[in-house]
Image (cartoon, rainbow, N blue to C red; front, side, top):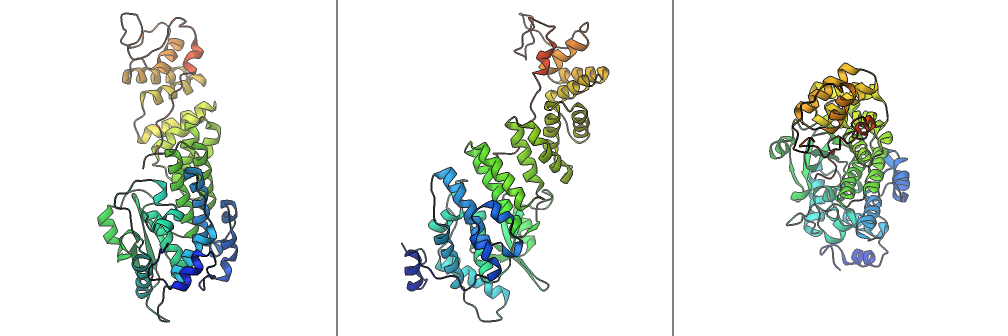
Length: 409
């Protein structure tokens, strides 16, 4: 199987015999990075000892086994990266643009790497083992390959995130060059990407320059989304926790982890990551609302009240969330505040169950504004009033917050 039609025959023969020579570009400080075989080992490495290609292959192997039941040799696939790097030939002292052009030639012209004609939005388009074996991948997968080759030839690159995309950037005191991995290494300036992707104003993480360890964390974050799509929530939690080991400053990962734990009913575990998320980004409304819900579930009523009220300052709460706020007030014996919340919730959604039962408990003499059917029950609520004094029923009707962005790609 000839992946690289213009690569010297001797190297190809050695590669597919599993005996490729060690890359001439592998630096001694990265020896531990080359030996790492788990995220835990990767997390203990400093930036200078981290080998990006090895790290992404380690992650890809785990995800490939979990989602596709396929394993592979990290060493054999890393040899492909080494061979690509060894074929990047430039004169000593060459300009950065010449080095980039040489990398482009080896990856796209000689290697034949490209993007899928019709993207499927599946993990195999970004897992590095599939990208290498198929010579095809989407922006994240091709960018990881490009960065891994560039690292071996001494070309340090940053990853730059924009909505739904990643591109690469070289930066020094004299120049800045932005590289599009899905367009055969096309180079442009930042304004090009801002114009094409409308990137400005899309969040605190947008347009940031990410180093190797941070990029590894971002890659793990993306893997968590594929796990969620596959219905493997526990694996998604592990991927997000691993992402934070590599890049603890990513508020999106904290929020996603907390949201996923809430969806699993693990509210006590969700509190810390959700709180971290809103402390890092105060505008993250859904995470704040999920945090309030987690507090309520854990009987931390004052925290729930404070957090719901903070959410109200910048966002509209649903009837269910306002009823939850009322329930927290009720549990703190703040009757008037609880009644006001319950009435407001019922005005928004007649028959809202938490509010209905709360009002029956606190103001049994007062009729709630609810439309009744001929059977004497609320039209919008499939609830039983056979025992109207069962106040605990309302406590069991705590409404979950809106689902997080997990699973939406």
